[in-house]
Structures are given as structure tokens and as C-alpha cells.
Amino acid sequence: MTSPAHVAIIMDGNGRWAKARGLPRLAGHRAGVEALRNTVRAAPGLGISFLTVYAFSSENWSRPKSEVSDLMGLLKIFIRRDLAELHQNGVRVRIIGDRAGLQPDIRTLLEEAETLTVRNDALTLVIAFNYGGRDEIVRTARKLASAVARGELDSEAITAESFAGSLDTQGIPDPELVIRTSGELRLSNFLLWQAAYSELVFLPCYWPDFSREHLADALRDFASRERRFGGLGAQDVAVTAKG
Image (cartoon, rainbow, N blue to C red; front, top):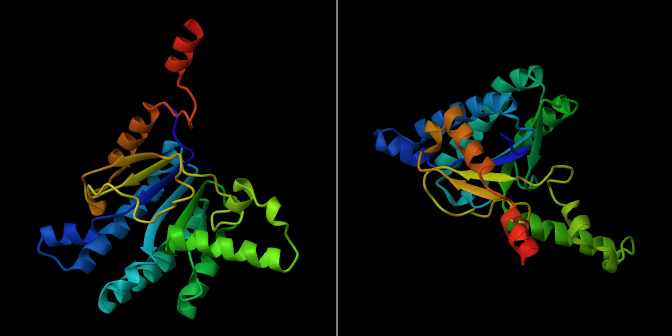
């Protein structure tokens, strides 16, 4: 089975998982962190080189302040408790998203994780934090427009490839597979540019229940598909050749 080098996951359903069990939402988020740990540990053995997870969207700030505070606290705990293991296992941490509005202690923590693990190559864990696909595209457009205004860049030199190279994900290949849990059937502003040709797998399970088996099943689903990138599939080419 050929595994995708880059898998991206929308980790959805923590709150509903907790509600179904009569637990507070924080319990769902904590269970979701454990599911993330298990997924990161499983990814290299399944042939995955890049794993991107949607940890906190730019729209999540609209949630109750208490929940936002809980999520920030869980991020701190995850990095502080897990960074040593990630580093020991050769995991490189990359953060994408807008850091401008984050609290200084959060920014420092994220930067420390990136700096410590920068030379690791067993797996690149990309954490989308304070991230929104539209926001990323707008920030990139502004950056390139400023370069043009300063005379540092010819507008005619801006191509799809150069634009992609200026996104938060520069140096990271586009995800071949995007997985979303909880049964919702949308991307929710996640990797809108990068997921242009991604295969999509939507799973009914809530994120805290996501296991290595779920990931392996999604990879098998991916392997069964024919990726054409706007061209003809093998069967179509054969028919055309005969005709």
C-alpha cells in the first residue's frame, strides 16, 4: 500500500464526545490531546512524513473565554510534557498560523518547540494554531504586494508556485490526504490553497475515539483511489488510445 507523504487532520468532535458522556467540554479536549499523542506516535510507522493537525482556528476565538483559556492551557501542557518525547523520537515541530495576536508566553513556547526540533526528520508535525486558510492567503497577498510596492518584486513574477512558496507552509508539500472526524463534511477554512487536489476522507467517529486503526483505514481508502490532477485516468487513457 502506498501511503501519502503528507496527511492533514481536522480534529473535530471533542465537545460532542464529552456531551455524549455527560462530561464537561474540557474532558473532551483532554481526550482529544491523547488521541493526538497516539496519532503522532503511529504516523511514522504508517509511512507518513508530514502530519498537519488543525489545533485552533482563527474563528475559535469566538468560543466562550473559559473554553479558549482551557485550549490554551492544553496547548502549553502538550508542548511542555510531550516536547522531550517528540524530540527524542525525531519529530520536527512546525507551527502555521498568525502569531501576531498570541500572548507572549504562547509565542515563546511555540518558537522553542520549533528551534529545539528543527533538525529532526523522522516526522514533521505541523500544528495549525490561530490558523485560517483565508487569513493565510490574505496575509501572503499583502506580503507580496508590499514587496512589489517596494520595488523588490515584479508583479509579473508572481506565479502559483511562488505564491505557494510564500505561504505559512513553505517547504512543506501539499497534503495528499485530508481527514475530518465527527461526520462533518467540510474543510472549515483549513488549508484551502494546499488542499486543492487533496483526497478527502470524512469519518463518523469523534476525534477522541480516533485510533491507529482509523488512520490505517483512511490510508487504505486513499490507496484505492486514482489521483488524476485534472488529467485522464489510466482507464480513460486506454479507452482514448483504442478509439
